[in-house]
Amino acid sequence: MVRFFRSGNPLTVLLLLIYTLLVKFFYLLHPSTFIADGSEGLLYDLLVKWLQVLVGKSPLFFTSIAILLLFLQTLLLTRIINHHRLFPKSTYLPAMSYLLFTSLWQGWNVFSPALLINCIMLWVFSSTTELYTRTSARDIVFNIGFALGIAGLFYFPAIVFCVLLLISLLIMRPFRLAEWIIALLGLICPLYLLGTYLFITNQGALLKRIPHIGFSLPIISDYKAWGAVIASLFFFILGWMLLQRPLKKMLIQTRKTWAVQIVFVMVAILVPLFNVHFSPDYWVLAILPISMFVANVYWTITNETVANIIHFITLGYVVVMQYFS
Image 1: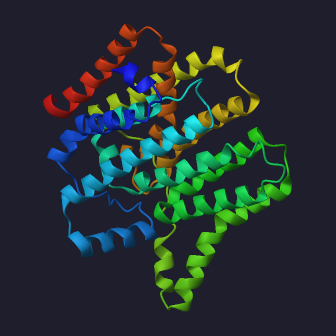
Image 2 (image 1 turned 30 degrees about the vertical axis):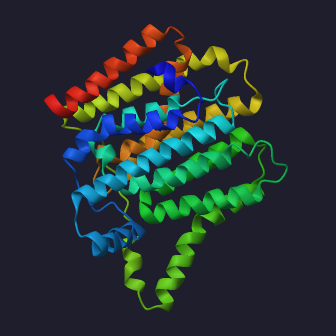
Image 3 (image 1 turned 90 degrees about the vertical axis):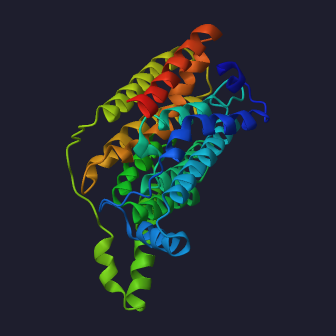
């Protein structure tokens, strides 16, 4: 099966759709509504209320939307990776990896602020790859900061991703203080615009609902969550190690892009720690970049039998955790 996803043939999208239904079918059988644990942002609250007016609290609707978002994110992720040639040839392995590893834990398939922010982070990922080639990147830097500011309005701890932006600037470009200041201005701008609108419309009380942030240590009591986290980190480290040899032959821009993805993983792991109430559900933010390293594991293992064995072991674990645990 890995052989089909290794190909960059556009017809693989049909196989990817079937694969999505396979690994997500359990969650469609046992749907959930949406995550609302007090950590969500003001825009997320407004979006959920608007959707509830349309369809009520239909678990099937919200789960279907979540799975549709995951599928669309796989397509966008594949397009970005293939466009910037992070792998020697076009491939759908990152898409397969993202769908497979988000299936390890039910909370990663529930409509949530983190799932919406992953859409924003795909655009941020695509934009950071352009920083290296631009003579002046002030517009890109402001846009990335603005996007992260909007992400903070959906889920305030996402503001921590500003660390990713600043480190990306250090990796991709020579230090320019003006670009750092512009990045921070872009980050603040959505909050300023929203605050101005709420003040003008006499809804200033809603501003108190924006900075939902705290700090809590990750206490995980569910063995399924432990299994999902350990499997994800194991494949991330393995993919990182297998990347070292081919990395030397890559273009400088490609090497720097992979370095940014490592930082992306590290920051995304830290973001949920700033929840008002910690939940492993928000670690789906880290699965997005981790899926690239998982894909590298399958790409590097050229022996199809070994690659298929590893894939079916992981897929078997997903099925057991879903249906028989």
